[in-house]
Amino acid sequence: MTLQVVLEKLHKLAQPEKVIFKQEKFGVTANNSLGIYHKDLKILAKEIGRDNDLAIALFDTNIYEGRLLCSKLYTPKALTSELLEKWVSTFENWEITDSFAMGLVAKSDFAIAKISDWTKREPEFEKRAGFATMAAYCMADKFADNSVYENFIPIIEANASDNRTYVKKAVNWALRSIGKRNEDLNKLAIASAKRISTYENKASQWISKDALKELQGEKINILDYPRATYRP
Image (cartoon, rainbow, N blue to C red):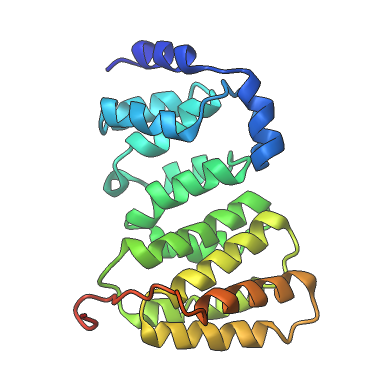
């Protein structure tokens, strides 16, 4: 499918009134947006299939939904560090940050390196990208050893005092995801959440309380990764 054809399809799906709705309802503020819901982009992405050249061309149109679509068309294993750095610097809200983190970065060969790097960044959505990738990596790699996730805990604790909404939510998400990977990591995440609860900071208190509520809850679904070690 050509770029022109995809752009025509995007413009047919456009609902300008949804731009303000998404901003007010979901906190998604986006420049050059057509007002297309994520679910509709998923359907279009399935119709198109993987196409790296088209994905890059869509990103470079600067159309918000074109960039979202890029995250669904590009092949994770074909990513380069340079391309990821170009993209992460443009992230402007949680929706596009998480779409790239979950759909691409966590499934790529650069996942751990970008987690280490981006969680040190100051811009809100670059830092969120690091923690969103961390959260997604808990499910993306079914064979990674526990030590990988144990190394994430100090990063989480070092950033648990960041009061910015989309950072603290991603830190919380990452901690909960680690705690649902297997029984051993559940105990580790609970211990981390309890340490975070001692921080005299609103973000830390919220992260700890929310994480403990799920990680110690009766309905929690704890997985059995890595598959080589944990089996039902």
